[in-house]
Length: 316
Image (cartoon, rainbow, N blue to C red; front, side, top):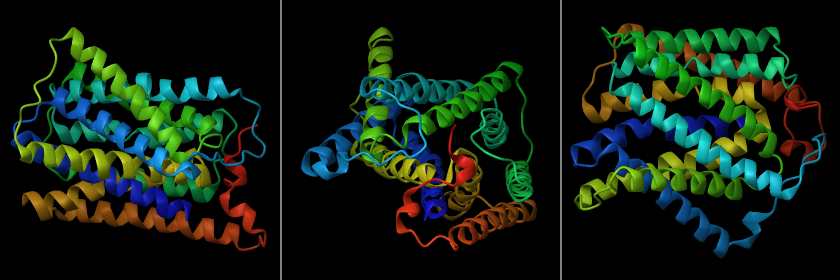
């Protein structure tokens, strides 16, 4: 179940690039897109929490060190205000300086960084199967992105792109410390509220934003807010809670494959043979991880363990 949730999250995030391009074509700027995206998503989750109080129920956190309620809330808001907002700013800053394909390639070094960070922090064990899946998924992503054709290189852009990958790595590792203490909807709402607050302050200091774009722009931004933010975040946090940071990050490498496929179907872009091979490699790595999860859960007869992360993913 955890792997399926991570894959659904990756698919939703992968569609965001398509929605974003259609929003740009409709006259929406980057600042407007991000501010409306995070604000609308935060409002939707806030309404869901008011209508269904049961969604506020926090999951159990066996084996986790004590953390006060205020500290959990502060970390959750900071994930959005600092982590999510900073990652988005770095990503789009790099996009202004370099080709999108190379930017995506540098950004998707984060699964490697997450795995290394989780191992160093003692949260995960780098088993041979997981190492093979990591290498396969990263190599497949490399083929998918390099198969797009020639890319341009810009030193500052590359630095910003790597900073975005590093920021997202820290975001995942920090989220893993609170994802067991807050309900997924509550955590996502706090993260989005923090991000929306940061972007609102930024808009105030940069002259504000123009929200007079047409209904087409609002439609595609709404798709980003609902599909690529609300659904994507909820499924990611739920999957992260069940699989741990390394597996969640490796499964997330499906995202650029989804983007490439949707770009072919919606935007008329063509997949090359190299991209097809890379996509098959990524999906094969996902299958390896799913088989591992199924075998690990088979001996257990306690249904309560279905909501507990893998033993290798539990922090000390």
